[in-house]
Image 1: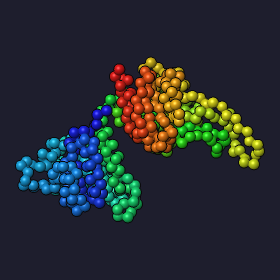
Image 2: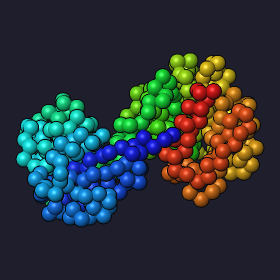
Image 3: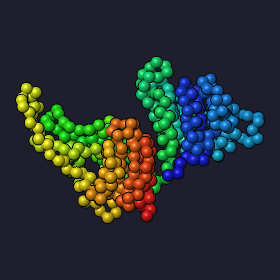
Image 4: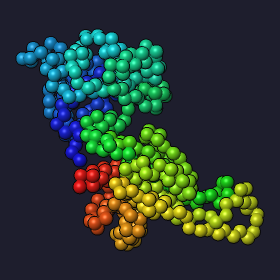
Length: 400
C-alpha cells in the first residue's frame, strides 16, 4: 500500500512547553514517512528549542516572525494556503485558550485562523492545568469546530507532578496522522478477528493455555480499521487493549469461541483466525478446587473443537478466510496441509523456532501461503508490518 502521507505538506506548529524538544523527533519521523515539513515556532518555543535545530532537521526555513521583511509574500497567508495539515505539538494551555477564542497575536495563530486545512492539536502541560475547567472548555470548543485533539498521556511530568498531561507518544501521533490520509479501500468489508489464547480449565483455579498475547490480533484490527473495515474481535486471554474496535467479546475456552463465532459467522465478509486455540481440553472439569493432598491424581484429556476447521466448513462463497499456524519444524509443509484441510484462502505461517519470533513477541518470522500454493517469505518482521501485508493480500483477492 502506498504511503498515505507521502508528499503531504504538513505545517508543524511548536509552542512554548518543555515537550517542545519532542517535536524534533516528530518532524524527523514525518519526513521519514515522506511528508514535507514546514515549522512555525512561537516566541516562547524558541526558549526550549532553537529554530536552527528544526532548520537542520527539515531542510526548510523555520518561521517565527509575523513581520519577516525578507518574505516577499504575506507569510501567514502563504503558509495557510499551502498546508494540507497543521499539527500543533506541543500545545500549551495558553495557546489552546487563545486559539479556541480566536486570538491571533502571533504568526502561528494567524495561520490557524487563515487556513482551511485539517488541524491536529497535541496538548502537553501540568495535570492541574489540563484538568482546569477553562482549558477543558476551550478544548471542547476546538473539537466542536472540527479540530482533532490527541489527548495527553498519564505519567510523570516535567514539573514533578504525576497525572494526565504528558505529550502523547510520538509514534501514536504519527499513526493518527497516517490514518487521516489512509485510503478506505476496505470500507465495504465486515471483519471478524479472533485473538489471544484460549484457556481450558481443570478446576476453578487451574487451566492449560499458551503464551499468546493478542498483539497480532490487535495489529490486524488496527490495520483493517484504518482501511475502513468494520472490525469485530472475539478473544481469549490477551495482554493488549481490544476495546477500541467496533465490538469485542471476551471468551475463555475453544467451545465458547466457537459458540460466539457461529452466531454471526455469515454476516462477515472476512474472517481472520489469529487466536491460539488450545488443541486439547480436560475430559472432566471439576466444579471445586482439587486439593493437593489427593493422591494419585489421574487427569484425562481429549481433543478440542478445531475452531478454524469449523469456520472453514461453513465458509460462504464470497467470504475470505485466513488462518494462522505456529510451527517449529516443516513450517511450509505443515502449513500447506491446513489450507486445504480447513478451506482457507491463505495462511500466515509463523516459524516460532526463530529468535524474536512467536507468542508474546512484537515480531514473527512469517510466510504467507495462498490456496494457489504461492509463497511470500516476509522473514522476521514486526506484527504491525505483517498485518499490513495481510491486508494488502486481502485487497488483491477482492480485486481479482
